[in-house]
Image (cartoon, rainbow, N blue to C red; front, side, top):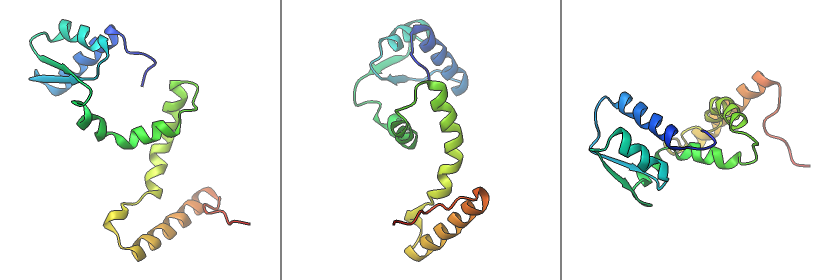
Length: 132
């Protein structure tokens, strides 16, 4: 996450992408941010560049859980605060989100009971408050 993505940042991003993939891609798909086009012309002019609203859907959906967490923390004042929260929350969140679609209802209830007991033992806080 960063506050803005200008041409220099986009250039660094493309170079890092090329370095990590180890080869030149045939096509690169980005959103409509103008700095991507400028950086693309400098770093890899021979690669076809597509920027269209619907083309990036597959990549955008691949990190949907991160998007959901970002949406939940819109009240943060800075990128650093958001990143600090994400780093702590990403370790705790899966503890309370078992892969429900792979379990039967009794197994899920037993698993959640065990997980809440572990959480209570670890933190000393009751996880499920009772309604008055």
